[in-house]
Image 1: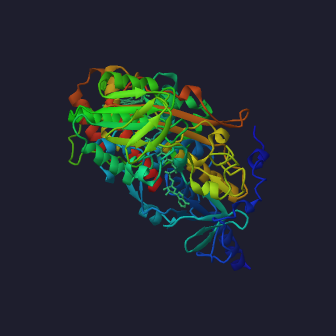
Image 2: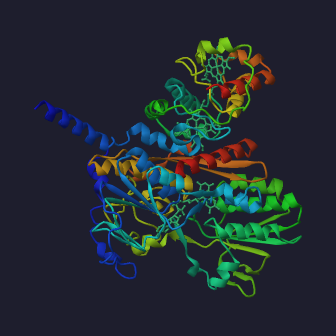
Image 3: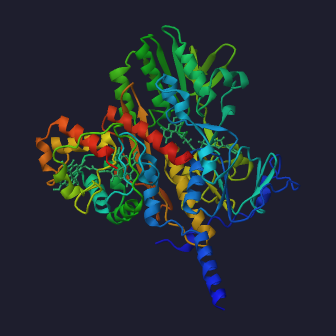
Length: 184
Length: 428
Ligand SMILES: Cc1cc2nc3c(=O)[nH]c(=O)nc-3n(C[C@H](O)[C@H](O)[C@H](O)COP(=O)(O)OP(=O)(O)OC[C@H]3O[C@@H](n4cnc5c(N)ncnc54)[C@H](O)[C@@H]3O)c2cc1C
């Protein structure tokens, strides 16, 4: 009897594993993003950022900022206007649930740790994996990191938390971009 | 809100498997090549639409048997093929094999589907038949050569379209590289709709960029059947005015009346002309298989399909994705690789749900088309397409569908990233 019950449970488990649940709303909404950001958000590109596994709150905020014109964007300034806030929340949850895959566009050789590494950790986490306060930056594409930091530096992208970047020099930004792109 | 019925109406007509007798009729004797062990989806055509559908079917439900039937061993992308013609990229950069899809559990069969039996649910290839539970058909486009008098085999060889990338891309690239000083490149553009609305204008820009780069004092002669540049008109025209003023001669509203391969001469309603290189893009329609298997309504040009699941409105159990699907029915998306890919994912999600007797999610599509206009700069246009219950089709969200405000080198990097990303997404 006992054995039979176990077998039945195993069979049930097997048959439900057999047919995967059909994709949910967030998955369908986020599917076309892979056209530029890579399958499951693992961008293979040099400049287009990795989004799979990024912090959910940050993904959502980014989309809403793009849509509102608060954050400069090219194609994203358009796409973000295509969805309701609810749809943005759904796709952000899906994308945040994907596995982060480090960009291959990182320097080959070791990069010296930038001087202000510690302050970054306060918001971006010890290893740069991101927190509820700030996005993941380790393993992001190098060219994108530089571009993002230059946007804070020039004031094109407005963020109280990143205000200190206004005083930094390109050389420092370059080193930080190289360093975090290599951080795994 | 949508009811369950919205998903099935229109697909109930489709019992008429008899529509496809004739040369394409399925022979009764054909043997099943791969006895079915689980639920099976067969995908016909390994372009952006079909290959993406196959890949996402397997990602969404690894338990499915997924077949991909495609005659070519390697797929050459039309996207970025204009850059190859210009000499900025080489063929390997746009050539992809199906090996990685095969390694991801998709059964890739190198063959052509000659017939579909929508009632018994199987397709026929050269060696026999393959049964399916659901079928995805993505044959792309074919050309209406017959609409151009004189467009015989000789003319087709001399005046390539290169509107399916491959040998003809190489032919145009070679002819351009060998163009004599002061030589001319003529391009004839058909009336819209055609595959890739900005495509011809990117090609014009890239040929002109070659002429400028090599300083060969050549000319690009454009015969456009349309009243104006069909896509991103302002951006293309300002690039031409700024960069290629003495190179591009653009004439709108020209109708091509006939060609003479022997004399290398074209007749138009505005007179006769010739050129050193002649590139004629004929009008397009759904790939031949769509016509042969009764997926096109009588007198139509594209395959009839529902906007919700892209299931054929003529035959149940068959979904149409990519360029072949009728835009009047499914929605206002351009015929692009990005849209084909987006449709492939939509169908994959819908088919997984339908096979389990569940209701599919509403479709959500995106498009973006980058076009390179000089050796360094590019432009783009985007779109988001969502289901509109009043229009009963997919409709572009206005605010999300606009072109770039100018041309930038940064967008060229995004274009390269897109090419890398979407081909990895499609071919694994
Ligand atoms: C010059 C040019 C530039 C372009 N640039 C872009 C761009 O930058 N961005 C973009 O998004 N789009 C672009 N496009 C458009 C894009 O190429 C098409 O929209 C896209 O290829 C459509 O995909 P598809 O799967 O419908 O068809 P296809 O890609 O044509 O694939 C169809 C496949 O089906 C196969 N097939 C046909 N019949 C059968 C059969 N009976 N049995 C088995 N297999 C069969 C064919 O061999 C083919 O491989 C461009 C097009 C051109 C011409």
